[in-house]
Amino acid sequence: MRRISRNGIPFISFFAISRATTVRVYSSNHSNMSISEKGKFGVNNNFENVKCLDDAVSLFHQMVRMQPLPSDFDFSKLLKTILTMKHYSAVVSLFREMQKLGIPINDFILNIVINSYCLMHHVDCGFSVLAIYLKKGIPFDVVTFTTLIRGIFAENKVKDAVDLFKKLVREKICEPNEVMYGTVMNGLSKKGHSEKTLSLFWLMEQGNIKPNICNYNIVIDSLCKDRNLDAAISLLNEMNKKGIRPNIITYNSLIDGLCKFGQWEKVRILFSEMVNHNIYPDMHTFNIMIDGLCKEGKVEDAEEVMRHMNEKSVEPNIFTYNVIMDGYCLRGQMDRARRIFDFMINKCIEPDIISYTTLIKGYCKKKKLDEAMQLFHEIFQKGSKPNIVTYNTILQVLFEVGQIGSAKKFFDEMLSTGPVPNLYIHCTLLEGYFKYGLVEEAMSLFNELERKRENVDIEFYNVVINGLCKNRKLDKAHAIFEKLSFIGLLPNMRTYNTMINGLCLEGLLDEAKDMLRKMENDGCLPNSITYNVIAQGFLRCNRISEMTTFMKEMAGRKFSFDATTTALLVNVIRENPSVLDMIPELHLKNNK
DNA sequence: CTAGGGTTAG
Image (cartoon, rainbow, N blue to C red; front, top):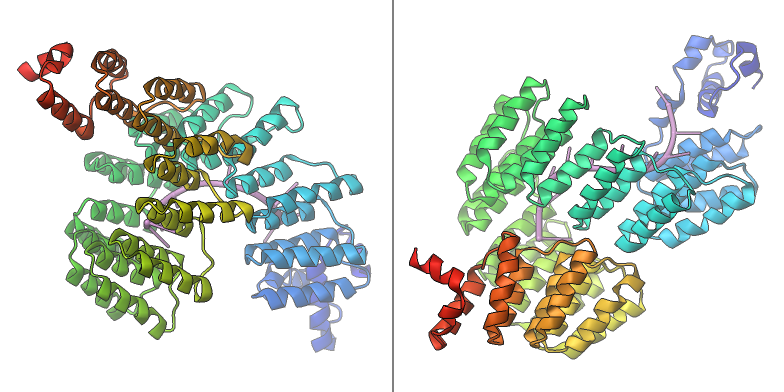
């Protein structure tokens, strides 16, 4: 440590010293190392040696034994390394050890600990760390709260996350910055609340904190996922005008949106535009385009793009092959899919669990359960293991073909030997039970999951609400709907549409219309499905004159009857032709 | 060159 003061450098990281010490041990003639030599053994070089958790833990134990103790700076850097390696519980236990040993801690370390808890989906434990800030007199900051908000979103508690954000702003507990806005926007967007994402973006624009490239990328991606491509492109133009240069992520999001909605001409334009801006397509870009082509059934074109990648010296990766395989599976060309499968093996790319799951999904789609199960067993033979998606794929098809017994057996098998069940698996089970009228089994599973405080989200509740409505248990469905805000969940479009459909099925049209107003008030703009569901309700109840009034509102919103509503209307007219006279608009259309 | 955010597969 004397060395530090001699160099006149007030602070040298522990790691620089520890490496220098090591060198001295191995060759005594290096005892008078120069500053430049020491520089070679700086922090980064030392961190290259920490390859796994064991390395990190033994370094930690070396550190705690040192005299004098390395700084809190060094400890935070080590904990961050362990966090990056995704050993979250190790971060927590090493932190506890530090506390026990009375090692000084700082705000950085506490934020890393909170993030570890959040990434383990234990945001409640993250909140309990706040007590340590108070005890040590360390002030909370925007990073602390941003991390917690992200943790709340990770547990799907959208309402809780938004409420905390609002509270922080309203009570001026902390001034949100770009990252905090970005975190809330992204959380909202990923849980399907693109309207709210956009309004937060506008709110940000009006305030003091101006959106940066990340904020633009989040809202552009959100708009693209919500098929609002024109708005996304106009934001691209707007950011260009404001001097915020779009990057490869911006273009990838836009290209993904355009591909998914088949706007290939615009993809071409954007592609040349990005190259003009000296932003070049990367592997993501090509995979996004290949995926888009495959989903549209243009697998041959996708393969052409893959060959083009090679020319641009972007090597196709396993993702590329998996996506093309999925393309053939979607077209039901299982033999071609198997070609691709063998082709990638020839290219020395070992199929992964996603490759297998993709093929299994392809066979399930064609109801070829024998082939699917054969591949399922092959996974074990190859020394690999099916993941939760693989199990979910097979479970879905067993319910689909009505093999309820096999489905239950398969699920039990998974419980004993497979991965830990997740939300998707539980949704599949509940959907399956409800589909076959097994309401009691569904509800006992639902109650068990609620009791165990299992991680749930709004889509999970949508399945339950929908199942109850379809099984004519509207009261129970409504009670659960009312409960959502207490669980910290925000109803989304599907939730409202499901409830409205449930009300219509019971002939409660006025209540359905009330719910329509409620969703508007809650900032969830009704879509075409909402209006069609209500229109179908009126038709089923033969309340034609009310329907015509409703149709006017619907037309004002630029929504029209979809195929289901039209078919229902045709049936009603067939049974009672006088209905036709009550709908003048329709008459005009038919005459044309 | 210590902590928090953005793009592809159910």
